[in-house]
Image (cartoon, rainbow, N blue to C red; front, side, top):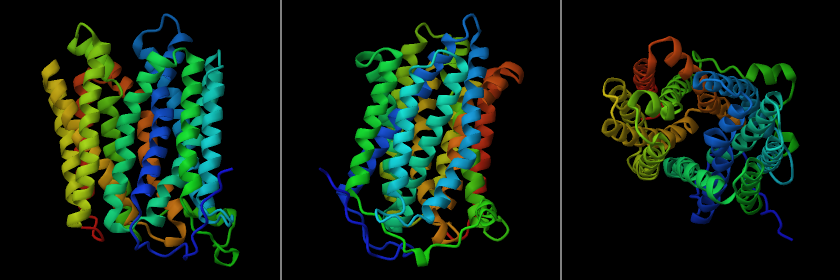
Length: 422
């Protein structure tokens, strides 16, 4: 029987100085591959099809609105699940470490919810199960991302963070291929993602150490202190506030630019085969996400600079969106996909590293990164609903991509006042 790696004996609040190994990074990347397949395959295909099947005769705006409402409800739960999990893991005194019990609990909840989701026959059941799956996703990823600040030295954080975003790109394509060619059918599709999730996350939980926290070192716990900790004053901690704001706005811009791309191809560009065209554009996008997240993340580590990469990444996304707004033709869409992938891949890796360097208190890294993670999860959850509203009632696809471009520019400007990180 496989045993857990022994816990780390060093102080849990100490700043890490020893580089993590290639084996650690491989297990970390593999875990994220499983997570992204389990999260994005339902978002991209299984869940929209399930919602559409329950709303026969609806136009695409109505279907997207229904899907957006479900995603939005899940996003509301994410507002609580991320920082709450982080705060509780900061105080966990398990002999297996602070983060690993929460990773395992989140993975099991996530996987079980996906299995139940495949059995649902009404829209309420779909919504409830997706909310539970989203909570499991938040619990798991809150603990997993905190291992960067716990175990990875600053000089490696851009590169290691790139191994969050590169598996996202691979997982999106791989998950779609698996459920459309090998594990066909709704129940089998959800079940395959659940099994792969557990199979790819558990090796990281088993084979990577995690610092233990003595009860004497645990911060005092009260519900009032826990609730108060969810608010981090931007006046007292301006770098945290600016980074959080920048991350939120840039992710809103990315969500607006990507979530309705299929409908943009169908109704604005009017290509003959929008499904196949979407796959091609997605492959271009993902190629540049992988390229940027790994190489630019490492370059950021080497030269010791973060902000310029975040600014350029946001500008690249803005340019892609503005091109789509004014030139809605397929060649420009292909160029836009490359620019969007280049910008978002760079942003995902470098901004994650930047976020770990502006955390106010070593004793609450889990909670503070949980708050940071809200800025990624909630925009993606509300993106379909917000985008459908803009297209239907506020100017069509041109207005949608202009909004995406403007928000990305605002996100780039928002990171400039950060002073503690170059």
